[in-house]
Amino acid sequence: ITTPRIGDILQKLAPFLKMYGEYVKNFDNAMELVKMWTERSPQFKFIIQDIQKEKVCGNLTLQHHMLEPVQRIPRYEMLLKDYLRKLPQDSLDWKDAESKYLLVIET
Image 1 (cartoon, helix red, strand yellow):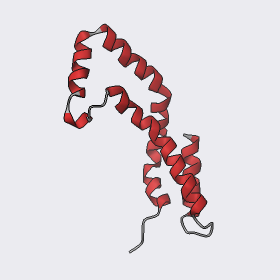
Image 2 (cartoon, one colour):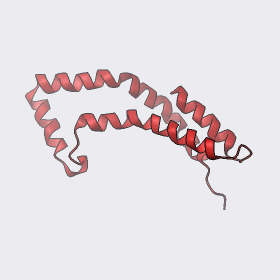
Image 3 (cartoon, one colour):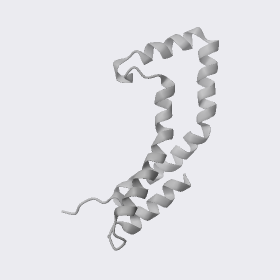
Image 4 (cartoon, one colour):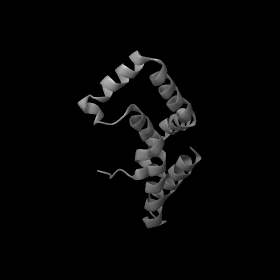
């Protein structure tokens, strides 16, 4: 049995990093659209408020949930940076972790 390494785990996430990058680029526009439609459409505002009351939303707003993916990439970056700092350079995971770190900071 081999122990999974961070590099291996992040390799599976790599295809989604580009998608996160696109999401982040369009985030401000998306937030502005939500604000605009909330102000323009009472029906839209009601639907959003109704959904936000659901237990699964944890009393958080739509905007808060929209922000979570934006915050995820910096968390990955901090995690990998700290991991690489503590990982011996001769570790089997070093090259994979470093390449994934570089991929994350390019996102």
